[in-house]
Length: 224
Ligand SMILES: [Mg+2]
Image (cartoon, rainbow, N blue to C red):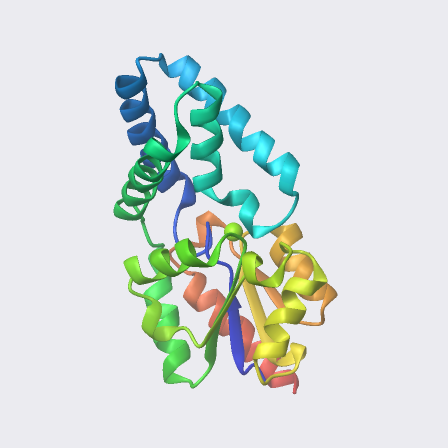
């Protein structure tokens, strides 16, 4: 019997690109005006800063920390990082949060899972604080029983350690859980390698993923 559903967050519950593009646009506009640089220079240096952080840190939650990108970007363009980094960080995330578009299936599925007494868990790459802010922003905070971020696990999906961290916090066996996520490698392979059931979310399922998920759960429960 499926007792809990484990959701990925980014690009599974909402459209990441819509938010990210709006946030980058606001950030670029601000930085170009403030530091008298062109959009091309902004893009070059920001991309360089991001790649540098990712190379330095590898597949851990902090590799997504925008605070580190802002700081390094400022250092690279010759500005004092501590004066501006927090401001840039806030411009990025405040714009991002304001532009979050939740997929239509999400509230219907969460309500139905709650009606059926199926627990809702989150297993998400990225730092804990911003993932909490996103979930509050889209008003899903009340539904979620347990959350594990890659910052907490120490590694990103599909690493076993991420799934094992979640399993250590929930009281169910892997085969009583269903992972739903948009990444075949991180979410689907990662979950199946640890014995969880898994269902792939694609953007074209955004209107009927609730039905697909409930049908999948019913199928598994029939076999038990
Ligand atoms: Mg995702």
